[in-house]
Amino acid sequence: MVDTCRQEAAYRYNTREQRISLRNIRQYQGSYEIKGSTVRQEAFTCSFDENGQFLHLSTA
Image (cartoon, rainbow, N blue to C red; front, side, top):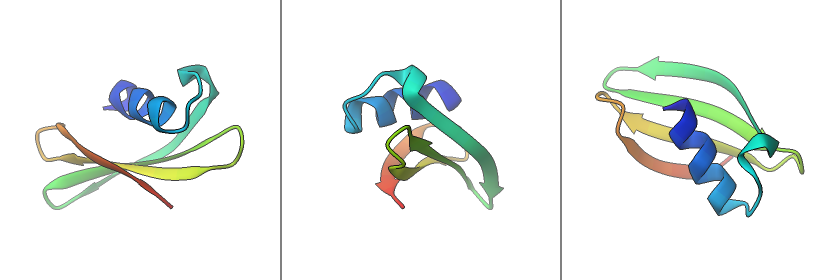
């Protein structure tokens, strides 16, 4: 999940994966969320289903 989130965010914000910081992974009932940001302070959240499949990336 972490690698997928980094890849999706790098693509969305047109930057390298190394410039993406991920903070906390939270598990909710039936899903996961990973919050992160770019070096330009653009915040985002990656969402995954209960099986760890990527759902979407949203801006914070």
